[in-house]
Amino acid sequence: MASASLVRRGYAHVVAAFDAIDAERAPLPANGPSERVVVATVLLVATLGMLLQEYVGARRFFVRHFSSYQDAAGAYWELWQFCWWGLWRVVGYIVLPCAAIWWVLRQRVRDFHLGLGELPKHAWLYGIMLLAVLPVVWLASQAPAFRDTYPFYSLAHRSAFDFIAWQLIYGAQFIGVEFFFRGWLLHGLRPMFGAHAIFIAVVPYCMIHFPKPMPEAIGSVIAGLVLGTMALRSKSIWGGVVLHIAVAVAMDALAIMARR
Image (tube, rainbow, N blue to C red; front, side):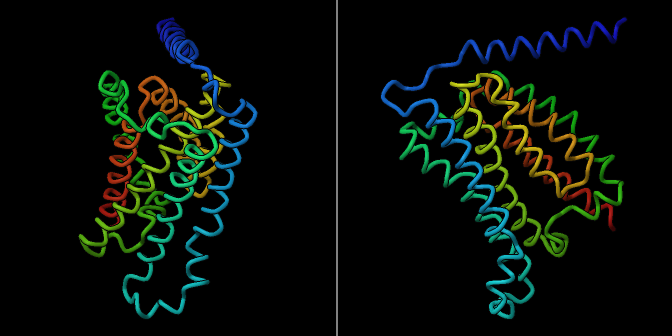
């Protein structure tokens, strides 16, 4: 009975959060493009950005087209591959959406949750989420599939430079991820779909986790719903950025230590 009551109260809080998001929904600017143009722009730019990352921004593309520079890169050839990978995440997740915001939607980039918004009021929730996730990360680090996946950069353990350089690339990618999924998609679609924009954004967010272990891909659905709700309530992506980077550093460090 107690567990059922807890579930009902949790569900009521979720519904209340979605209702608050819908209540705060503002219409599109009267002098801007129509709803159809906005929806098409947001979704097609998202599709283009992900296509470029998958094919042009892939490490295999870099190896295929820049292999003549391998000797010059020497021991850092793999790191240069990830620099290419990170560059195209920034292009697909940040540059293309910002260009569309300026030239097609004719809105301000900072309105797409780039400011602090109401984050100070919700920061404690992100802190609780981090404390809840870290033990799960530690347990996952004991699994072979986890150790075989992280860090993506296989030489991150080689030196402090390798680890820090990789974390800078990885961190920039997470800023892009949060802006893309919790800024571009959510704020862009919110005037038409309200809280339902969260569920739309969860689909591609789950798909980018397909190369990772299955439990993490499943967890990304829950994470996408929670982080999407939090971003719309706080009107900021930065809580998610800090949470993502903190978890990523912990995952990589624990994976390295588990292999020793």
